[in-house]
Length: 485
Ligand code: GBH
Image (cartoon, helix red, strand yellow):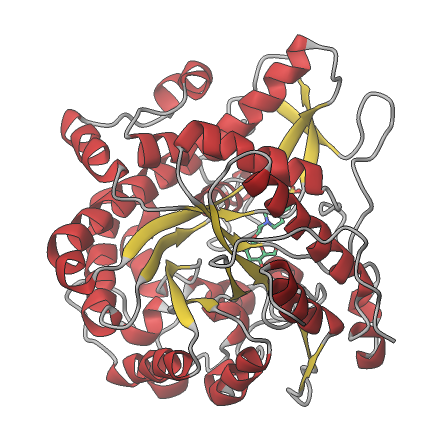
């Protein structure tokens, strides 16, 4: 039975675009097929499988060998865009600026892009969604060597522009720099798995990694604008994630400040240098002192120059949390702004119903507030580059149960309503929306447990089955934009 539409189904502009998002390592498989080099995720999942729920993405959804089927699936959902990432080590197996190119890898993305365009779907391409070539880590610890990383990333980016830029008009440099910095080089739950327990310097590494990402982004934007944009006419930006934070106690200045500070440590860290051409937020500099790298005069000039070339704000967003100010002085390796993140406030109240992930609650009001926060700070049109959730209990569902995903439909409905209100009531420019994800896939450290797809994937048979939410999005987007369904 089809779930009735949520009562509130608010309109969206006719030129609003929608689609789905994925990332190479999470869906492609073909880990060593056709000359692909290893990435840090191949190593991370194989060397110590307990870090990825005992699983790896050697095969994943085998999208590498099911690409045409997946293109047809997307076409059947009537998507306008498809956001995917390029596996760096598939097209430059060793990754470095002097290393050989793998034409077979390039051909795969050529076929993907051509297949999208043939179906009237516009590609949004992310250059870096976490699958760093292993060799660059071996050579110089990747992000921890700013100059070497920047040179190698720039060459990879230019290769993508020169080979794909005739057809790709929306580019994203990095997906979620906060996660790369903090989850990769502080808690160590994501590759390359640096943490205090593995003997790494968590007091400085996240900030050095973030610095490298910001400067590499600016270098790539500068190159694109000078060398490619005049003929290719595309746009470019970065995708930042972040929860919204509500104060743990609404009445208290201390906790209101904590919520604001948490947003600055999460989003302002990258947003202020990249979109405003400014130094790191004041509160970050105050807390971190010399642990936070400094921009040279030249680097600052480049950031100021490239800031306005970011043509949109790429937002990955899932949920809201409460922020409580800590009373002790910040720990030397604190990355939060000395804030505790909680699911309940001072009255024991939850923000919204829990999804299939404990950290992910249905909190559309926070989403709307975050869009306002970002708009007021950066004044850029927003593209929602990821949004979605697993249903409660979904990891245990049979396919018949999984396709009946009314919880996800409700989530999407409320989040699309929040976008509508942000556009029409708050005056914010929001250009489009990518649902995470096209299909169930490898959820990093959680392996194949959590299922975020609007398409069910049977990992044994690799059979894809659309969930009801796929048809909900198809019809709801048509209706919201003024069409019949
Ligand atoms: C995105 O990451 C990724 O871009 C995508 O690849 C991934 O599959 C998708 O979201 C779904 O997770 O902050 O302590 O509450 C989001 C990374 C994962 C970071 C969950 C924050 C919550 C732990 N986020 N994590 S916490």
